[in-house]
Image 1 (tube, rainbow, N blue to C red):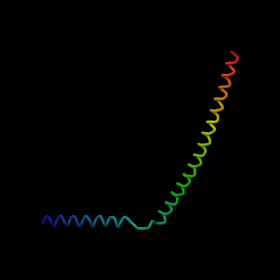
Image 2 (cartoon, helix red, strand yellow):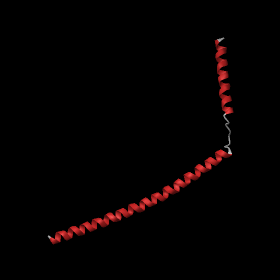
Image 3 (cartoon, rainbow, N blue to C red):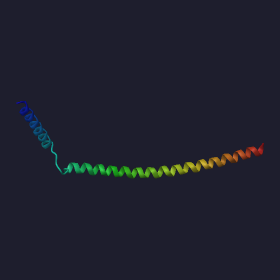
Image 4 (tube, rainbow, N blue to C red):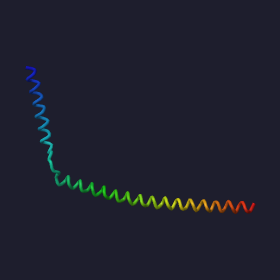
Length: 88
């Protein structure tokens, strides 16, 4: 008897799981609302990627400017030190 009870419980549990899956609205194709959300997300991702590219280019430009300014500063400091050594 216990064997049939276990089989019946197993069978009923399987039916309940399948029933909940069917009631949850699982479909193979996304609905219009899902497609709209996906398109919005894709647009936001593309916009973020464009912004990232722009910011990377700006960063490269600013790093180059910083290096140029540091080189100029080193030259000016060397000039100043040379002039100070000449006046001593």
